[in-house]
Length: 102
Image (tube, rainbow, N blue to C red; front, side, top):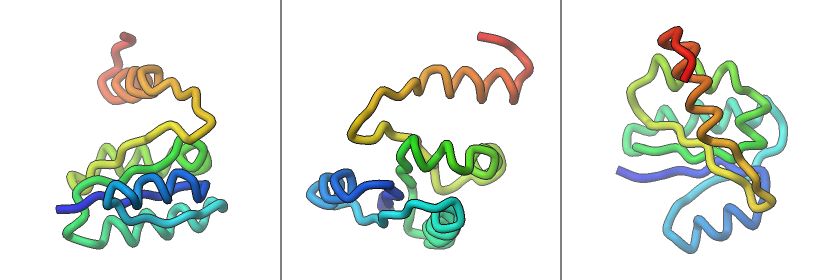
């Protein structure tokens, strides 16, 4: 099982590559969705890491994948500039899925 990165900048990609994680750098919504579908079609990919900026470009589709596809796990990571409110995102997912506000 392996990880795959979808990033909006080369610095994040290079850092992950040093850790042994392959990935791509994309900037447009269509490129993000194409890269995500390609990563999901690889049965060896267990985790897809995607930067917050790219997640914001196609939040609805990524949310749908997270709820309906068991593998790979899609994880939003902060980018290099990064102030990411991951806990707010998780709370929002739970709130929408379960109907409870945390």
